[in-house]
Length: 142
Image (cartoon, rainbow, N blue to C red; front, side, top):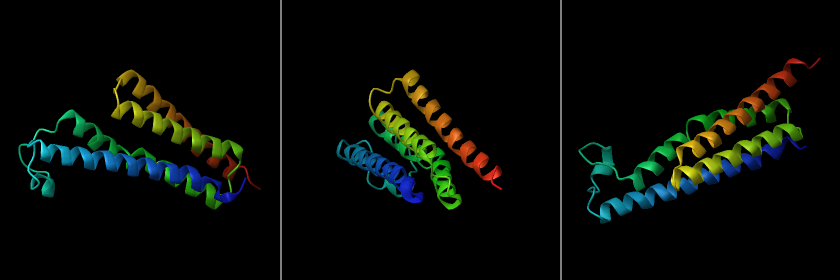
């Protein structure tokens, strides 16, 4: 596979992050329209505003997309730099992305914790396997 083939799963993660940002923005606008928070609250996020669930979920999910996915982006870049971009690595990258999309769908939807945790766990398995594959490939080169 091309060394650039990992750009596409990374782009898919960026698009997911952007989509969650749109959901988050709309939830904050809704909070202001419903009188649950003044616009000034969003300057520093200080004050006694209790975030409703429809805003708390995308708020937390957006923050989460800057936690574990950083290891995904780093792994993809490491694979590209080292030339470890075989079908298995690209498949693991797409598997990670698919599980993160499923995780987002569950979390921002009905939020069934058991289902959400499964998707999240499988995404971590894909990520760990991606990194192990890269490390083993690099370590076994002559």
